[in-house]
Image 1: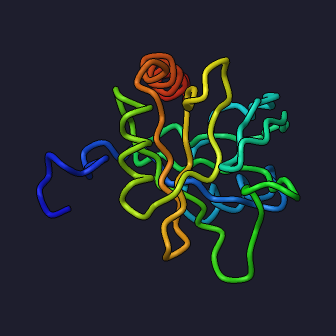
Image 2: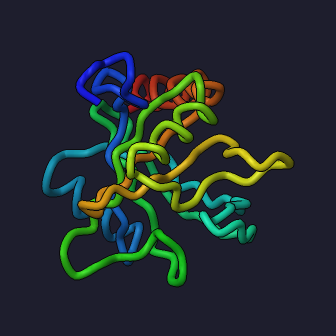
Length: 162
């Protein structure tokens, strides 16, 4: 996969780094003190997900994005899901925009980076997002371009208020 056209994602599509934390608010305070990070609101969202083996369930996600680029996403740990802390690193994923979620997800799956979990919809393909786990343990999150405008508007509005 040395040809850029054959890669499912590229470096210019990267927009955030996801970090799992056992305490969302404490993590936000710590990164603000340590790095001067400014945070947007905390979102609590019931999210339908589908695992690689086809199980569909609803998880309550608690998360916040940093306002300024490069964006950090802090995610509250959820036991029994892919969003758990581990003893090595809580760097959870690299998030990439894509205008072809289903096709790019299939491309990652075929390149030895299997699907771990994705947004569940009515169809069998991913909706809104898809996490793929690399053999090195780092996840690649593909995020549908359809939500990009809303997220960028949120960030720019919060930065202007900040």
